[in-house]
Amino acid sequence: MHDHQQCRAFFEKLSEYIDHELDQETCKLIEKHLRHCQPCQACLATLQQTVALCREMRSTEAASAVPEEFSKRLRAMIRQIV
Amino acid sequence: MTVTRRANPKKIKDKDSDLIRAINSGPFDRFPELVKRYEQKLYNFSFRMCRDAADAEDAVQETFLNVFRYLKDFRYETKFKNWLYRVAASTCIKKRRKSKFAPERELSLDEILPKDKAEVPDHVPEWALMPLDKLLNDELLDQISEAIYELPEKYRLVIVLRDIEGFSTAETAQILNLSDTNVKVRLHRARLFLREKLKTYFTDE
Image (cartoon, each protein chain N blue to C red):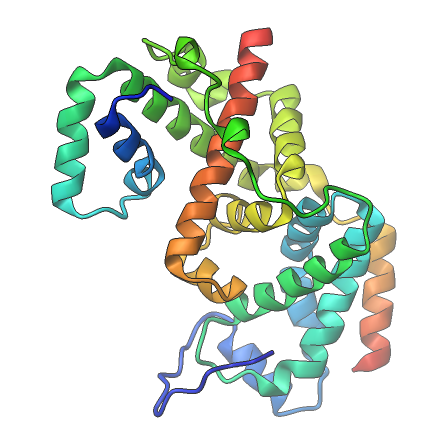
């Protein structure tokens, strides 16, 4: 963490910034700061890419398909209780 | 499950409401439809939380048993999916307390922040600029899964619900019975932890 106090304050808000959860005024302050602070630009870009990669995990669901044997057992159990 | 009741709570209608009403007006012969609708999603969620396939299967089974047991108490004051994930999260938490993986702990700042000033990048690294389809491969997906598993449970729950399952901050707070602020703090820390893991992975590559 670079030690500029303003950088640190913005760093704490970067996830909310990415998620569009900040008010307009705070967003403008962050964007103004980002224009001249390369370490913060790198922080934001790496965090944005981390979030984007995480969200991509959603579409990899087929890779962990429910095992067929388990699915059969589950349905048998459900048939018993209903 | 403790629920705080408001005077005139608004009823929520979503894609599951009709099915839940049909099941609750009995007989329960449409319950298997609900199982079919959520089996895959709950298995993925449970697998991400429990890591172990057998534990994930147990968690899914227990979740559906609990849903069957408590569905009559569902008040349509929240989306059914949120209520379902609340049951699933609670089941996984109980399961994991008996499991051998990742004991509960706080994330320390050492794990989520660069170690010293020298590590602060003065430019955006290449991996952060690459399009996802060029960047993603099975090895990287494994690395991300592995890093998610390394997160202490309370952070993992939040990042899985928010960034993987796609729930909003408010919905995640409702599912986990946390404040919005708490969800945001945990999510930010979890993301920073993953970012550090990714930085190491791309540096070592």
